[in-house]
Length: 198
Image (cartoon, rainbow, N blue to C red; front, top):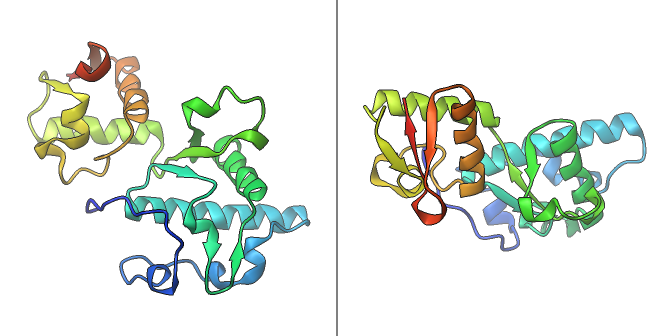
């Protein structure tokens, strides 16, 4: 997958929504998609469709952090928007049931999912990301080399890597998987944090 840039959360218009490089799901142009349905079976299907849309959209645009106010939850052509409380229900489903997202750390202090506003979107699980980083170090001869978080996230050698631009908090969790597997050691703190993968 090629590296893209994070798109601005400006309101999606018909041009952005029909961008030939990303195709929105057909449900996106169906007005009831923007209102959570009361029937439990229908709602579960709707949440799964929203989750699928968000995963493919965020993967395509390399968006790792998503807030309830993001433009993906609005359809200007339909003049419809998924309500913030419904977005939070969707986020809770992605975190708790589907395991395709995690709450942003600063939001964990809030008492309930109904107060949380942001998630990290995981189109790969943390374990899958760890395997991708490990495979990259083997393919590029980086094993037993100290790499800073900056080098992994923004360095020249990772320009074509899918994790490029990932939030440091998420990268830290990814690298901790390699530590638990006995394949890496974390070094330093703060801006100088690094890792040695063997």
